[in-house]
View (cartoon, rainbow, N blue to C red):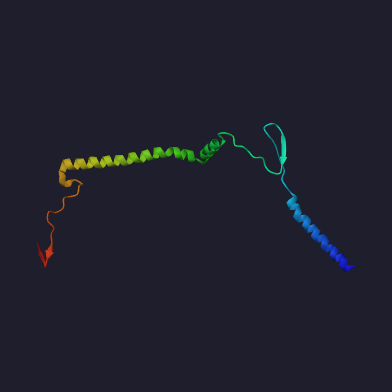
Length: 129
């Protein structure tokens, strides 16, 4: 009698565990939506949403504005122009300075490299030739 009661308990426990395990599989989501014609549809899969024309571009534009990236991208040409102006101004000042020193002090003070010596100097056994 005890053996039968123990077997019955074991079978009930197994059935209970199987029921619990199957309960998670049995739980499914149900989706409800109304289509363009006004028909209500129920399904276990979500409806396929068709993108609205121009929606993608609008979302990208909005994301760029929110993140500040759009403003940063608009500022790049102005930043490049400012850097170019600084470099050109510096170059103009150098040219003006070198022109001034060349006209004022002659070609010896120019920033151009001097000409190489006409004949190389060599040393032979302590004598300079």
